[in-house]
Image (cartoon, rainbow, N blue to C red; front, side, top):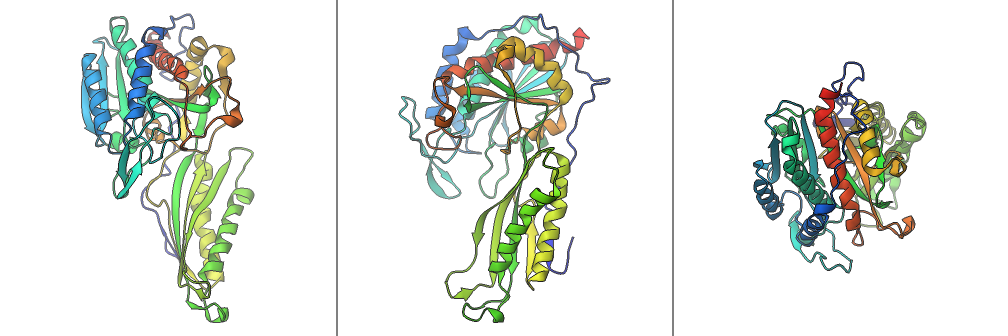
Length: 445
């Protein structure tokens, strides 16, 4: 779409409707709530040791080479079929029971962040790496170390009982959830493109994220959108340079940018049905000019859009170009909008039918009193790319010690981030029991 004062560049199709399974005629049958619940006490020490190893040896996105090798050796030791090099460093283990049944996938992310750890832990990270050409500290500041350890624990339990199971299980260890370095691609989107959900074709997928703000033992769940779609954007505003003392000789891109920033907030506050789901438009960077007395030729805005349903996402895709175009025209400037800028994640959408099917599993495993029907969050997760292809459920599990006040819990992606080892046993049990119940759901109709 090219207008007289704005060029909108849509770099890829990213508004595909999220697949929702219908309860009528669905393959998902209500599981037997009297089913055996697998416990993980016997391997808890191993899970903790794996977590500590990963935390002390973190690797950045698309650089998880040693992490991948460690996981590969472990999965081969369990006797699983193993594929490596998927989306550069991804690892997939396949458990084939040899009996007909569904294919269930479980996913954990592997990458760490360029963050300097500020915790006094015996397994504290002192690792450094390279990110976008810069030497940086490296830390598991979002809990991916626990995710890998929990999935390894589930792989152990399920492999040990494979004679009692049906169907097949894929254990997906995914790189680059936090985003690839500049000039690279990676993560769940690339794993899907490279066929991770095929051969055999996955019927359902589950994932967990540990939460530093949720008590150990608790599980947060939600049907529908649980985490937001993310769409970064860039606006380049071009005007006419002039001396700051003579603004009438300029076409001022700075004041044009200011008006755009304020106006785009009215998309959320005046055009979206916020009683349904929240949305966010944030400008995170403004670049332009170099002196106090010079009005520059050009200003650049970089920001992010977060939405929790496709209707709001589509509306913003229409409204942002409209706002930018009209304001640029009113100020005699020109503007170019790039949307999305470099990457784009869909809504992390829990299939309603599958979510209802597995609620009894959550109740048996965690206890009904520990289940929290959660509000969605405006953070994003590329687990959503798996959910676009097959029905999936994504859950939050507690990692905060119960004696720590919520306001004292460290935030994710910070140097102080820490979660308790005590939360992982429940994670292993959830992954295991969700898999078992889903494998047998077809036969329990």
